[in-house]
Length: 352
Image 1 (cartoon, rainbow, N blue to C red):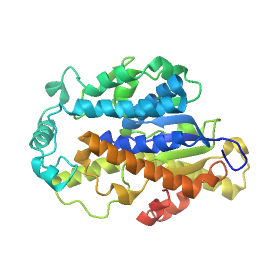
Image 2: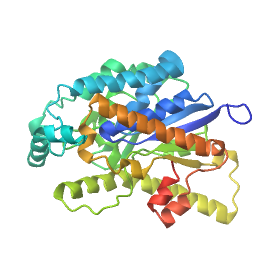
Image 3: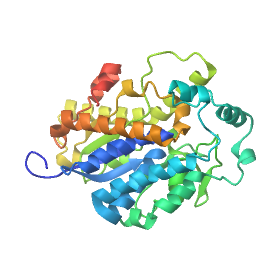
């Protein structure tokens, strides 16, 4: 319980990032474990969207423990499916204890093929093992009727580049697969005559549905894509990977900048928006602890690796709760003005 004996309600914003979404699994597991907290709404993109619908379905089936079990079952299913994937670590990487696929012959072949041929040529039927897993793991009727949590899933319209947010009544298997549709790997997902790609291009994740929420003023962003990199990329792969990281963080940074600008104007003008107009921003993320995660490791779903990420995510959440729990419902624990004035690693570190 909170300091006054009441449960604190929070909204969650979950980023995408392939198997690095197991970091978010760890964060969610720790939050669900804490009975002082209650999740009101979740906005998720790609892997974040998958975590969101699995959690909501599990919560509808069996409350907190049901949600925790559902998340573990989902990630175990991903790991089992990965056993049959041609994308495996090289013997050298295994010997050196590296989780990346950078030296994997099958990964290098797939990477090269994706730059020469489109998924409409290599995968015209859009076969995606994740679709089969989600279909077997999640009851989307439960997700849409769950009254404890509202889920928002974001995908990008291919023709306009704009974000489409699928909320209650529209959160379907297709919506989640559209949110996770990487155009280098899969054909666009069609929904109601519109074609979609990964939501990370336009909102990773979308914050506006949470800003306008009447359920809680607190938005807790679980960020798994690093904003800062200590070293300048020099190889072709490093450059491409960094470009992707910047691209998939740009939409989030723009939304945070808009919120910061709104808050600054309200403060300077002395505008009293009342409780309904308050927004408190929190960030669960540690740049230092994602520096060692290679981009190719987002396709590594070995159980030992997922477990390592899970424990790391739980550690993030535990540290954040210990440092900032009392701020929930009262103030932001992430200083937006400091971030935009000087986005240095030390500033990001305070989000933990």
